[in-house]
Length: 117
Image (tube, rainbow, N blue to C red):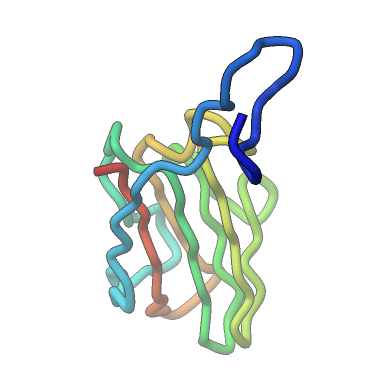
């Protein structure tokens, strides 16, 4: 074994890499969201991570189906609240379609989407 070479002694071989190349689509302004459920992202089986940022003064609610509401889904706080999801920690919900709504008025938000290459 060479100096600095990592080997699992019980397996007698180097570990498999855990990091896969990801392409980030950044600084994307999401669609305007109102008081009814609006689809903000289509399903993408290559999506491995998703970050939603709410820079507005109203809370944003997001969920993976049209039942999104203040009591059903994820609350993304006003004033740069953030929701971060990844495939490894949160499972396949990351790859599905996503919907959002607010209580009143309209909101714009920003999202970053990471897809496997």
